[in-house]
Amino acid sequence: EKQFPDGFKFGAATAAYQIEGGWDEDGKGLSIWDNFVHEAGNIVDDSTGDVACDSYHKYREDVAILKDLGVDIYRFSIAWSRIMPNGTPNEINQAGIDYYLNLIAELLLHDIEPIVTLYHWDLPQYLENLGGWLNPQIADYFGDYARVVFEHFGPYVKYWITLNEPLATCLSGYGGDSLAPAKGLVGDGTYQCAYNTIKAHAKAYRIYEKEFKQEQGGKVASNIPSPMFYSKTDSIEDIEARERAFEFNVGLYAHAIYRGNWPQIVIDRVANRSKLEGYSFSRLPQFTQEEIDYINGTFDYLTLNSYFSTIVEHTEEAPIGTPSIYSDQSTLSSSDPSWPTSASSWLVSDPPGIRYLLNYIQEKYNPGEIVITENGWSTVPGILNDEDRVTYLKGYLSNILDAVVEDGINVTGYTLWSLLDNFEWSQGYTQRFGIVDVDFESPNRTRTYKSSAEWYKRLIAARQIVD
Ligand SMILES: CCCCCCCCCCCCC/C=C/[C@@H](O)[C@@H](N)CO[C@@H]1O[C@H](CO)[C@@H](O)[C@H](O)[C@H]1O
Image (cartoon, rainbow, N blue to C red; front, side):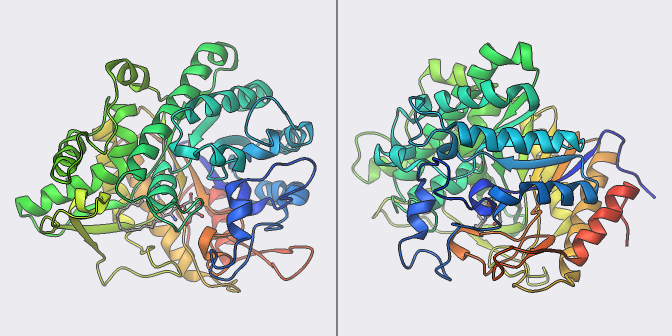
C-alpha cells in the first residue's frame, strides 16, 4: 500500500465565526456577520453564530478531540474584532488575545501545530462602515491588524494564511448578496474588492517579511479556492472558456501574487466590455508597476481549498447591458450527472479532479509547497453513520496521495473541512460538514464522533488509505 510521506501533515480546519460563539463576550467588537445574522431573512433557518459550537468556552474539548484523532495540524482563524474591537490598533482587547494564546498553548501542549488564518470573512463592522473591502485604505487597516497578530502569536505559529477565499468575499459578499455584507455590486464591486484584497494580502506579507520573518521563521500565503475545471468538449471555444472560467475565478486572486498583475484575458475582456458599456475606464482597477512589483512573489507556499469539479462551456457573448462579471466571463458551468451530490447544491464528488487540479496549479504557479486547507463533504443534520463522507474523503485523499507519490507534487499537508459541524454561513445549520457531530439543541453543544471521524483517525494512524 502507498504511504503518505513522513513529513505529510494531517489535520482539520475550522473558522472563528463558524465555531466560536461568544459573539459579544469579554470586549469583542461586532463583525459584519454578527449584524448580518441578526437581520431576518439572511440565513435560511434564521439561525446565528451567537453560540455556534461554543468553542470560545469549549476549546480545550476541541483540542482533546484533535489529539485523539492524532492530527499533526489544526487550522483555525482569528476573529479580528475579538482582538481589535473596531478593527483599528487604537484598542487591543487583552481578553481576545488571551483566548488565542490559550488555544495555541493547548495545541502545542498536545504537539499539534497551529495553522492560522488572519481573516475568514468576519470583518469588524466599523471597517465595513468605512467601505469594507471596497475602501482603498483597507490594506493599511489589514496591515496594522496583521502586525498585532504577528507580534502576539508569531513566536508560536509557523504557517499563516492571510485571507480565506477572497473569491467568496468579493463575488458573494460585494458582487453578490449571499454572504455578508451582501452588497450586490456585480459589475464593479467584485473587481474593486479583488484589487483591495490582493493589496491587503501583499501588505501583510511584506510586513511579516520585513519585521518578523527573520526572527520567527514562518511562512505566509493567501488562500485560493478552486474546483477542477474541465472543458465540456475539445473544441477551441470550450477550451478557451475553461481558461476564462479559471482566470475570472481563480486567476483574479492568484495571478498577481504568483505571476504578476491580473490575468491578461481578464484585463482585455473587462476593458473591452467597459468601453462598450460607456465607461471611460476599465471596471477592473489597474495596478501600477510599483504595485505589481510589490505584490508579485508575496507567497512562501500556496493554500488550496478544493471541494468539487465543474464542466465549463463557451456561451454566446451577452448583449451589452447591465455590467456583470458573469457577462465579462461568458461561460456556462454544469455538473456530470454521474457525480454524487451532497447536501450543498454546489458540492459534487469527483475524486480524480483534485489530482488534475493539483498538477494544473503546480504547473501554473509553481508555488514550491502546497497545503490543502479545505476539502470535505456535507450531509443533512443528524447523520452519524456518514458513509458518503467516508467515500468522498477516501476518493479525494487517495488522489492527493497519487499526486504526491506518482506526480511529485509537493503537497505537505491536508486540513479536512471540518472538525465540527458548524454554522454554514447563509445555510445556517442545515448543512453539516463536520466529522464530529455537534448537538446544537443542547446547551452543552455535545460533540459525538461520526463514522468519518473514526475512519480519519485510522487513516492518520496508518498513514495510508484505509477501508
Ligand atoms: C470556488 C468556486 C469557483 C467558481 C467556479 C464556477 C463554478 C460554478 C459553481 C458555483 C459554486 C459556488 C459555490 C462555492 C462555494 C464554495 O467554494 C464555498 N462555500 C467554500 O467556502 C468554504 O467552504 C466551507 C463549506 O462551504 C465553508 O464553510 C468555509 O468557511 C469556506 O471557507
